[in-house]
Length: 168
Image (cartoon, rainbow, N blue to C red; front, side, top):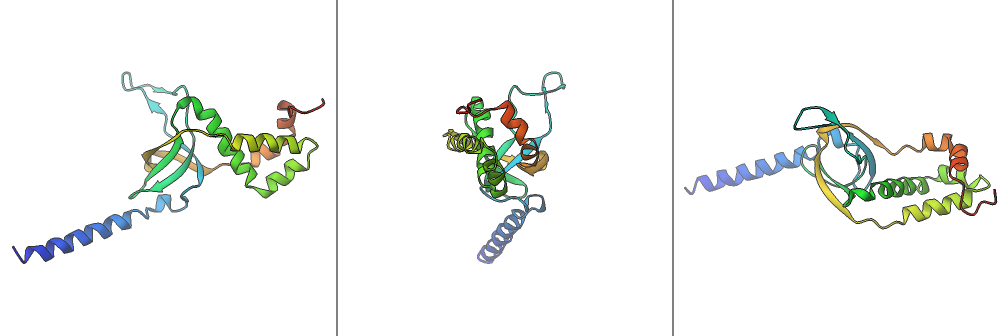
């Protein structure tokens, strides 16, 4: 019995280091805690008839709250599905405002100050959040929020979404 205690202790240490090693899963090495990513999961399948379907609201933007073992992460997202639109706008606005090139391009436009003010308001929106543990092995794609398409079509965006204070 006395001899089995040290063996048990060594076994526990080995298991602990094994779990630590799994938390550096290669599939999640490029992710950063606190960063926001667009994560697309496979289409949901209806359990009754086995047909794929799209839920009424699809969550795509998540903030990494923490990492777990292997490919498990805890993702931050709105508590209420009705806040998805505000959450997506908030995260996009935060990303845009944190990108110097994007802010400079918007400021160079005649309506740029009003547009930036709109993004600042969207970034400041308070949303009740929760977290969910997810295995990223089931993600179809993971990418950072891209501003390229938005900035390429910025003039169209201004035309379709004129600033409230615009005199046009």
